[in-house]
Each structure stands twice: as C-alpha cells, then as structure tokens.
Length: 352
Image (cartoon, rainbow, N blue to C red):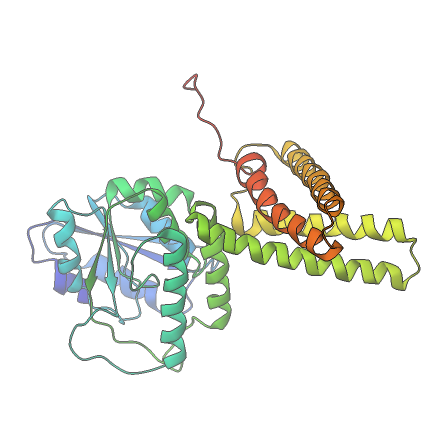
C-alpha cells in the first residue's frame, strides 16, 4: 500500500513483483486481495512464490530475474524503508549519471530512531571491508535500497549465488567488477527491533565477511590481496607446525613427518586460496588446477632450498638465511598462485 501511495501517481509505469518465500503469515492473502482490486493506471502487480523458504537472496534473485522495467529496485516488506526515497534514488539514473544507486542510511537526513549499536557497528565495518575489496567509497553496503538500470541488473542477476543475507556483499562485489557507475543518496530508516521480527544476526555477519572475501578478493587491489595471502600463509604455517608436532608425537619417522606436514599445509593453503582469495577454476579444470598448484609448490621448494644454501655459503646465519628465503617464498608463492594457478581465463580468440 505504501509503495502504491508513494510511487503510483508519477509519470512512469510501475511494475510491482512480490516474491513470497514460503511465508507462514497472511502476506499472500494480502497481496492477492490487492491484486483483485483496481490498480492505478500504469501499475502492474504480480506474485511469485517459493514452495520452500530459501532466504532473502534467493527471493531477490527470483524477482530481479523477472523484472522488465528500465530501472529495478529492491523493497523489503518490513516497513523499515520509505518508498518515497526511490524518487530521490531515481534522479542520478534519469540524468544518465549512474548505473546503480545505493540508498544510504548513514548519510545525513533528519532525525532517526536509535537502536542497536552493535548492529550498526557490524554494518559499518562490513561496509569498510567491502570497500577495501571493491575500491568503492560506499557508506552503506548492507542497505536494502539498491536501484539498478535494467542493463546492469540483467548482467548481474543470473550470476548471483547467495540465498540469504550474503546477497548484499555479493551484488556489491559484482557491481564493482562490472565497473558500473555508482551513486549514493541519503534515505530515511525506521529499524525494527528483534522483538518486532528482525532476523539478521551475528551468524549473518560472519557469512557476509566470508562473501566479501569470496566474491571480491580476487579482483581487490594488489595490497589487499597480499594482506589476505599473508593470513593464508600464516594459517598454513600454523597447520604445518601443528601437523609436524602431531606426527612426532605418534613416533612417525622424521623425514615422513616433515613431508607429511608439508603436504597437509600445502593442501590447507590451496583450500584457503580457492575459498577466500582467488576465483576457483578461473583458467583450469580441477585436475589441471591441482597439477599447476603442485608445480608451483615444487618450484618454490627448490627456490627456498637454493636461497637458503646460497646465503649460508656467504656466512649468513641459518636463521637469517631461512627468514630471507621465507620472504622470497611468500612473494613467489603469491605470484605463482595469482598468475599461474588461479590466473584469469584467457579470452577465446575464435569468438566461440
């Protein structure tokens, strides 16, 4: 009702697509009742339904894929956002300045309801991490109000995978990767309490952080990729040492303990790389990718040994020699993984 009141009396046609994600309340009955009543001129209303509850992201993808208008926006049914703000968001698109417009709850706009500090803190920090990956200067990545040109969302929607609240960081990463022109506008916001039905929680925040890395890290600025790989390398080092200690504790022969721990750490490194840093199967199929990874590990093992021995021959201490070779190994491993193992797929020159 609020959407019809706010947007139906303007010069544009309005297509309303309601996606019922297997709701258990009377939402469907309300929509069906509205659909039977005479709608204002230029307004259409359709109802799409999921047989089982799949989550916010899945519902949004269903709606976005079905939209046919020149501009496509998102509206939650929880009355936290004011549809009148879409008139403001439309301006940069109608003026030809933007392809995507975000409605920010944190840009200044009058009074606001004060609720949960931790919820706001989480939103702002997730936005900051997302900005580090996308190099976009957005103030509210987690906002519901996102307005797209039809061309932009038609390219993005079929690629969306997240079925819950991971939709927000995923779509933001893909907006950045598509190099779309992005604007922000201040919007009003009337947040619900958890007692009033708010569902997002700390687990969704953890998932959002994973999605920021998973969908955005492989195209992040190089310093950010190095920082992430520092975490991956450190985690692999811990796994290496822990595995070595475990093998020794069960009396595995020293040589087997060294190589066993190394293999486990290399596997950990590989899994972390494809989970949070590099786009999986960017160039190879799985077998070729693993072969390239093993080749890169072997190359860096030889380089590590060579650098260590070379430094020891010029009177370097063992600790300094090993530390130096480790630094060389860190950058060498990153370079081989980024441009050999997980390098972007090369264009098909045949045009097929």
